[in-house]
Image 1: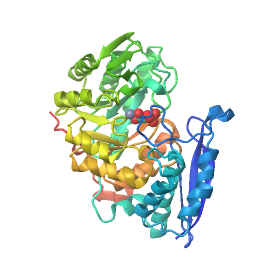
Image 2: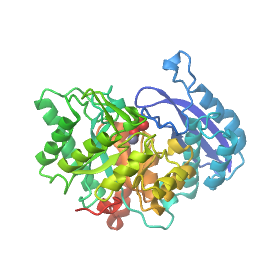
Image 3: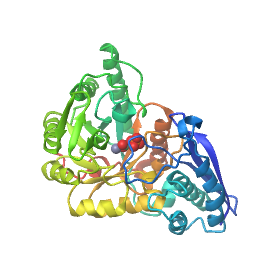
Length: 425
Ligand code: PGA
Ligand code: ZN
């Protein structure tokens, strides 16, 4: 039984205020969680409630904290923390708006995740095990950023994430070892070329490139530098985050100083797919271009994972609709886009029912909170995306999965290729 709920202001990886919720149960168990924050947010996601005004650029969170400490506390105290579905339904009903405008998506997601932690603590289980029960789990395939871009790097390049995935690794820990070598090799190449300029929001190298293709070329060379075979051992994953520069079928590329229509955008990305060992593309088109998504998926969905992020905003109904219209073959699952743990899980389950790839994902604004590492394992998502291989708000998640993998010993299984919604060629 929940006896206390407390909201406090803490700070995220961009030095911005954010919301932490702490839940205490009658038996003494407790749990806490911190809300993350996006920069390239989808218009359909739960609202991150900010105070406005002058303090901290208008980003303060006193309203969201007040919601936790008053309305939400009053509603949840006395409820059973073990019934996550009932807790989340109560939160949704209490807010009463589709986008969580009254209490704030940040207040709601921090509370929902904190209750989940408290319930696991009360059960005396690690969170991932509490979620999985006796069901099978796989260690997720990590999707790791090497270069940042887009909204995370002052739009220095158009593409937001240049990432790698190592599906041929034998274990999660080996996939991280390979990734570490590629990250180092990419850094060495940047230094050699006089292009090393620090890191972007998620810890990937700041992309001091003259074109998107230059970033892709450098990535392939960095993979080869380590002795890994590009496309076989380590492949490329891109988050185009096209909603950031596309609307109504017009895509304005800052680097190339040209505007493309949907057909030309698909042709450009198709050219990349033909030339580079790309395994996954997220948001290839804008959130308002479902038709383009369907066209792209019809053409490339049998050889590439096509992820809807801004398009699907971790919403089960949208995932089901995307499955019906074949406009993606994978769904990104960000708990704070949905609002509650239960809604995020429903979106993931809708993806699994459709045979989609499912990727639990962090936001560009993060913290030491490692809840998503447990969700990725406990929900058997198959894939985990948390940003780069630097900065501790990122490494905290990777390191947590290492601990889980170690705790499973010989029975640990790595998802690898099985996580992707297409057959390797
Ligand atoms: P965001 O970026 O957290 O800034 O929205 C992450 C993503 O687009 O996947
Ligand atoms: Zn994205």
